Length: 561
Image (cartoon, rainbow, N blue to C red; front, side):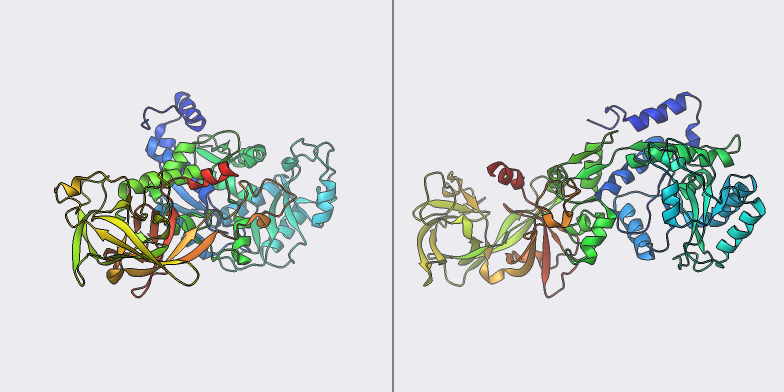
């Protein structure tokens, strides 16, 4: 179904309704507002695709705004990573903005709030404020500082800003309603004191705005028409609107907050706090570890921008949170790579195969198709010789009639090459097969058009010439968590579900066409799966990451259990 044919999602219906009521298309403007306190994950990808997708649909600008209001947790590294991820996904922002761009304006508005009796400096401890805030069923009680004189509030707020007061000694609170049924409306904090160096403003500020105060006002400054956020901010909408009511000027664009549900991914976590734990505690090798649900981790594993965009489009947006099976994400990358990834041969669990009647010292360079799904992909030459590597599980010494790979006394085709017949095996002192001896039919070469080459053989296996093989490190990844919803049981530490077998590092043997493979390039190892060149690769040593298998083997494993 094309984008034009699909039905509108509920966010698009809201926009269409606003347009029908008189909003001008030229006034539409969206934003993606991450906090630079970690790397983006697959959940953010959905939000990125939603906001930038709306920009494309309505030919409207989309800002990239960094919600950099907490210098204790934010770093330039995260800003750079976020920009890299958004660009990699294929999107361009209209303006690069920062909440810190508006610190002076936010401060001036806060002063105006104090002057109008809408805000006050509270000198209670955080514990005292928590006690007097009440409960969802019990109204709060007013702070003893709620009715401080305006001049005293202004002087204290100035001292807070100038760094004359210690952290935790005072906060600025909005004066709203301590009896509101919405706990967020019970005099929320607007500013707190933080004597921290900010990655953009340096040491200029000693007070920093809270999210609820900065976010809506930033939307207003940027003339955002629709401020889209996840469902946990639904209760914040009343406060968002209250803050805007105090500064809104007739005739200006008034942002509208609307919420959509998070889409959690099975067998992983999509919380920056928990992802940071995994990194800091050494359970993974960094934010871009291919087992992580971060966009940088998915990129390193071999996921493509198109596959992630397609995944976001497939799951869509909804009003209820649900758990998306990771196999859908894997299906999306498998579908995309099938179209674009060159085919190559690699053997990951090798056993030596010797063709007894193949001439000693002879080698051939055989034609191999690069990608049957792409008629413009062309072909390459692969070397063939007397000694080959094949996969160990492509041979069975004593096989039944349903086994169509190599066995003694039966024929199988070597892909792009010849038909061979199993003759004998050599074993070590432990009974392990070290060599498989076969004979080949020299008239059965693939594509030669001979009668022998046209014989129907049920089994085809891949191979790599021993003399030409490239040795490579291959990192085979599995799900990071054994439980489909490691966050599901709040009484159990999510890390207790970490899969101890999520990474298996092996030595593989590859055809020589991969000698100059570059980091980030995707390939299909025929009959094995899709693999990506890791940035750890050097001219002396290739490193590949397994992206995904050719089929969803995980579902089969789960069904057996």
